[in-house]
Length: 77
Figure 1 (cartoon, rainbow, N blue to C red):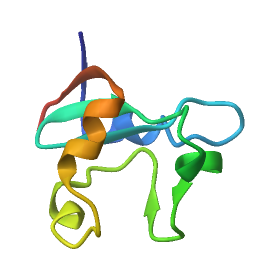
Figure 2: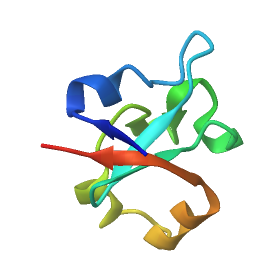
Figure 3: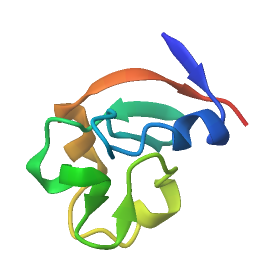
């Protein structure tokens, strides 16, 4: 499993054919196959390549939605 810091995570922004990764509670997920993350943007509020732990508190869905996606690594601070 890969380790990411915020700078390396930001490279996976879902643009120009790159994978779309997001982090939540120290885990990094590949959300590339989700139509809701097409082009690296989710609901015009969040971008791929970001740490979303705090944002998830305001989401209209449960964090368990991330279980649909493959964990590709961990986020190191």
